[in-house]
Length: 115
Length: 109
Image 1 (spheres, rainbow over the protein chains, first blue to last red):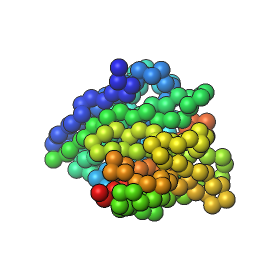
Image 2: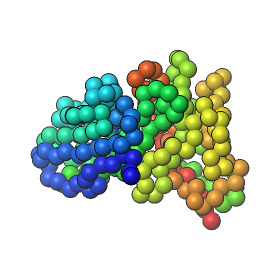
Image 3: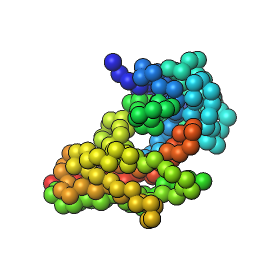
Image 4: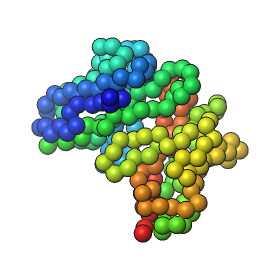
């Protein structure tokens, strides 16, 4: 009954590899997000999708490509991984409208380590 | 552009002491402000929002539009309050969200 789930929880990989992180929400929300939390705990929004459409793209290298097959899923694909990509990546979702709108529900995070 | 500032990276207080985590924002419209908390090895979760004007786990936060602040307060800190606290601002129809840099609260027993 997890609201926002992410897989994998941990991801260790070599520089130059391509990897994907998956996110699913069962809350019926219209909007999904990807955030990056670095080693200093800074939390920065990367992307936002509303009903499968890209809404926000915050100066993220084009090696990062989000994909939303349906409004319950938002996956993050990363090409040519670099050392600086090491971080915890959080997926989140929120309602578009109505009471409780704008509250973000976060996934458990995916800790990516690039060697 | 919207911005959220949390000036303190680390705030250490003794158990039972009052706590105030500072948050200032800049935004030209009417923002929605939130406090999120991240306990050790857990996901971020909403603590409270300014619209609700509620008290959660003894924490309160009042939106001061004149000072553009949304400070988080608790009269008596408890050890279980130790966590990372993020102030966040949401604006616009597409819910652009901006988080502050976070403040680590450390409650000393």
